[in-house]
Length: 405
Image (cartoon, rainbow, N blue to C red):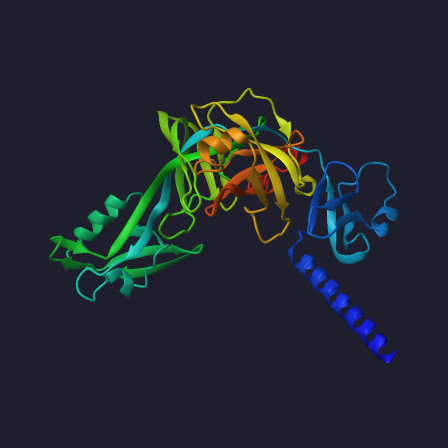
């Protein structure tokens, strides 16, 4: 009997610790605010049953007949065990025009970005000695604001070895440092030991256009420097129309890629923000396509869906996918959904997701769920997607009511 009692106690302790662990985990990763278009209860698509429902206190305290904009709610494990307090925001779903068309992206950095530092002569790197690191952004040199790599090279070469005062931006903070160029016998000029970059260009996919404001979103991830993997600081940028002319099929260990030709030098939109959730800006000319409602993250579920993307020409096509996993973690802005391409035609042609499809809209139950952001290098049939709600948070246009305010 004593042995049975100990066994029961051990099992009870193990279960209790497991539940406490799950509660602690979900308390840490689940968001504090949820948007719902109707109702005061939602079931979150997690590994275990998680529900969000308005608390009795919040409902009892309401004495008006109108819909409450924000109400207190509680997140529960298995619908019973309290996890954390939260807020439910009642809102009409924003109406957006889904994209899927290819866009050419041109971006000029704010200042010039340091790709890496190097020695000019044996053991001597003026930039490194001045405390400059890869990923830094040089805003000005001797008081002159920089907008091109070539101009900075001229300033350094014309310095005749005299110190140059740089203003550097690093992780959102600026500071001054002094660089003293040295003469390079190999190049026959003064050098600072800097590899720098001031622009980038490529092909991506348009995610949405707001028919009321002309705001667009694309990519679902930032434009980053290929060497330093840091988000490029935006000086100015634009999107242009593109015609897809070909692609490399994706294979395990080797992601494919779309190739396109910029249609003209005329911009179809200006880029005003480059951030973790994508690029955003204003379109030059309006779209007459039909808008559809967005799906709030609490509405997204595992199951069939489609993507809109372009693999030939400039007209988007719809392809079947499966949403395999949804992650509501508040720590991730751009890897919220795991998708699998199931469309036989797309699998045959491209092998699944390839580079250039970033930003392709994900549609589920007639709603704009989010956008494709990444392909799994080990398996091009799989990739990540971002919630459209997360993309809209970057532009402060989650709902029509927010926009009107």
